[in-house]
Amino acid sequence: MNTPLSHILSRKDTAVITVTPSTTVHEAVCIMNQFHIGSVLVTSDDKLVGIFTERDVLSRIVGPGADAKRTSVQAVMTTNLITATPSTTVEEAMTLFMERRIRHLPILNDGAFDGIISIGDINRHMLEENLQEARQLRHYIHGEVPCAV
Image (cartoon, rainbow, N blue to C red; front, side, top):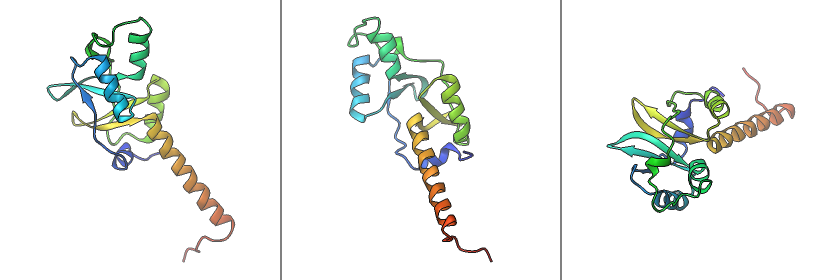
């Protein structure tokens, strides 16, 4: 659980899908569907200004019945960003996901974004760690672990 997020980032595609504030919600949703992702980062002049998520679509477009083809991402994006750094640990990220009730965490490195970690990425990492630990324990129980010299 002390694994830094940089480890998870190194094992996934670090391409960050972004849109501009003037992108329509419809266009942003099409991009999210195209890449099978649950959020896009919103940038202006290469600066991170917000995040647009599936939750934003549901609560700010579908719920109130807004027109997705005429509404800009800027009007409905989340601007109060919660971010992490590459050195943030998996445990710290899990705490952020639970306490802040978020599912996507932009990773910033000296102000520039390195990528984005989702709660699914964390779940996958934890599953892999648990499977590896279970394998090691089975080997140990069956006497298959080499003796330390």
